[in-house]
Length: 211
Image 1 (cartoon, helix red, strand yellow):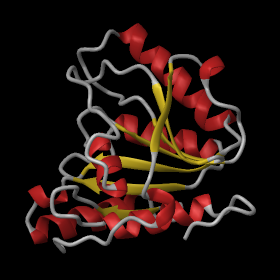
Image 2 (image 1 turned 90 degrees about the vertical axis):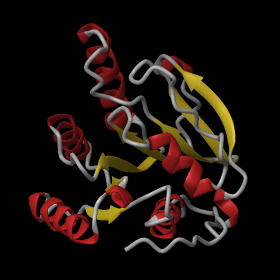
Image 3 (image 1 turned 120 degrees about the vertical axis):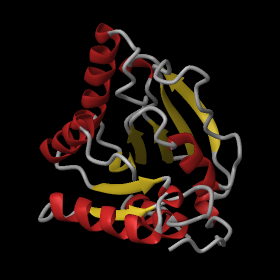
C-alpha cells in the first residue's frame, strides 16, 4: 500500500500562504470563492496531512497542547480559493463548555459557509468512526456537504490490518457516496489521490483553474 513517492504539488497547491486565524464567525474572510476544509480529532495528524499535501513543512502547525487550538485557520491558495483547518475535536482534557463552543462553531461553519465545497475528514486508521466522527458525518449530511475520508497513520498497520480497516469503514458508511482513502504523511500513501480530490472540488468554482 505505501508508495514512498509523491509528485510535486499541482500549481494551485504549490504556494499556499497563511491568511488568518479566526476565533469567531465575524472574523472569517468574506464568504466568496471556494474552500476545502480539514476536520478530525485532536492528534489525528491533520497538520501533518495539510503540510504533506502542500509540501510545506510548517504551513499548518500542530498545537503543543492537543485540543487547545480554538481558531479556524484559513490558508489562501489564490485570490478566491482556500484551504481551511478546523479545530481538532474530542480531546478529553478540554473542559466540556469549551468543547461545546467549538462544536457549535464548527457546525455553523459546515452548515452556513457558502464557499465550502467539501470536507476532508481525517480518522486515525487504528480508531476510526468514533462517536464524534459519526457526529461530524451527520452534520455534513444535514448540510448536504461532500466528504472525503482519510484513514491517517495507515503506515502503523500491517497490510492485512489496513485492508481490513478499509473494508470495515467503507461498509459502515456504505450508500453515503463518501470515498475512503488510506493515508500516511510518513510514507506518502494517498497524497496524490487526496490532492486530486481537492482540486476537483476547488475547480467547481467557475473561472478558476485547478491545474
